[in-house]
Amino acid sequence: MKISGSYTIDAPREVVWEALNDIEVLARIVPGCERLEQVGDNEYEGTIKIGIQAIRGVYNGRIRIEDIDPPNHYKLIASGKSANGVVDGAGTVDLLNQDGKTLLVYSGEAQVGGTLASVGQRLIEGASRQLINQSLKALAEQVATRVAAPVAVGVPAAAEAPAAAEAPAAPAEAPSAPPPAPERRTVVVPPEEQLRPESVIFGIINDFIAERPWAPWIIVAFLIGYILGRSRSRRER
Image (cartoon, rainbow, N blue to C red; front, side):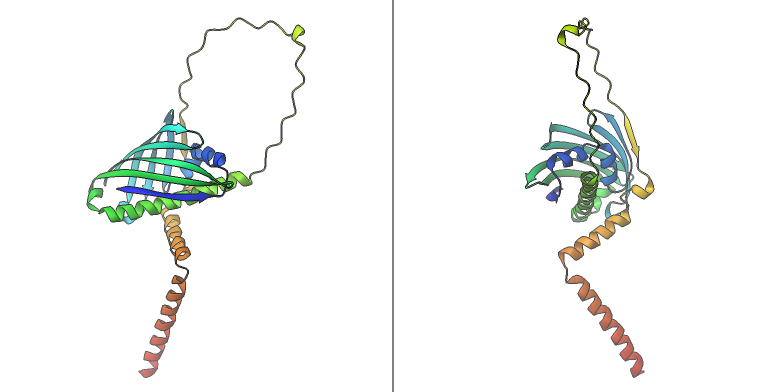
């Protein structure tokens, strides 16, 4: 299964890149994410609960980020499993400048096994596109919040350093310490902050209406016709 697409975010590329590399943001833009943990340099583990029928289930997965080129590009390697099957995939994310906005271009390929493989590629692909689209909308909202946040007040400039003649002699260079171990950060997303299945469904409906503005009028006309038809049949009785 292959998926690709693009999405425009109304913010500079550097701001979008920073958000995409913030575990707090990531945990809140993945639909159904309940927990996300940074287990190493550019490696994450998480638990996701998906409510869309075709791929419904609780998934435990791992994501690794490679080929990092800030603020332009990175590659994702992902694997996950649930009672319904397993998913393995890889994809790329590219950020392009667009007159002060950012065009996010994504592409990926995934393989499914277990019961999921019997669902059908078209259903899985459709559900995946819905989840990706809602995730990108949530990312745009997170980025908009960052852009709207007030700028921190600048720190007063430090007092001038003493003249070079008065500066104390530099201490002897200490042996270099080993690099610190990667920080293990865990984000547990409260239920009220999770991108819930119902939010995804409402988002799908809104997308459908936005792409087909005439659809609500057809539904209204159908309902009016239905009501008038029932009224007429009652009078004829």
